[in-house]
Amino acid sequence: GENVEQHPSTLSVQEGDSAVIKCTYSDSASNYFPWYKQELGKGPQLIIDIRSNVGEKKDQRIAVTLNKTAKHFSLHITETQPEDSAVYFCAASIGSSNTGKLIFGQGTTLQVKP
Amino acid sequence: ETGVTQTPRHLVMGMTNKKSLKCEQHLGHNAMYWYKQSAKKPLELMFVYNFKEQTENNSVPSRFSPECPNSSHLFLHLHTLQPEDSALYLCASSHSIAGEGNEQYFGPGTRLTVT
Image (cartoon, rainbow over all chains, first blue to last red; front, side, top):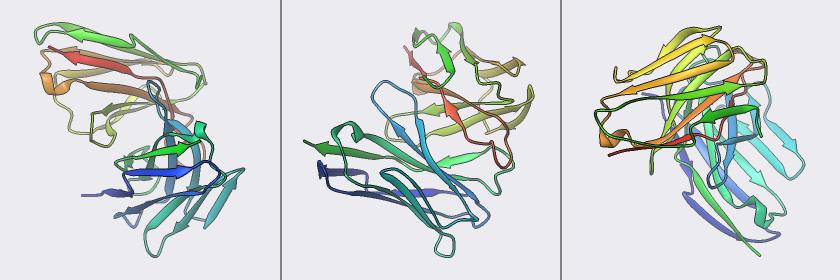
């Protein structure tokens, strides 16, 4: 079946450093890839997404890159701050994005040390 | 706040109880979703509703019964649950299930404990 692998499972960086989280997916028909941030006691918050017709998307300190040939996509956070500490999830649409179905990675716990 | 609210936020129930989870979205969206989030496991999609019609049931046991009376409200009725059903149940909504507008926004979840 379809799956999404996410690495690393934990990531610790110093404030101001960059953080990179990587995901690979198995379904070549996937064409929508969102990233979520989940803080303790809260639901996942959509922070950025990318569709298969672009290779990179940026929003201030956050960027996502997509390599459809290799079936992997990555989240890049620059100039990390303590408030970036959270669990981050990647996801990929199952098949095309016409069903609303997403499959999620296992999550990455990011710790930003002041 | 994402515009998706869930009640109750915490629920403890015995295996013979019947309870319901409620989700309401204030975003004018047409699609709603139920997910299960267990410790050490990825989020699992349970159900998808589009314009009040169920479009996906991800092989969920019948002890979980969803109801979508309108595009703004979604319920999950629970009965004769098992301890392994203890988890965080998340509701999400999106404008559409296809193409642009399919971004899903989550509520805060209901932490369910089955004793």
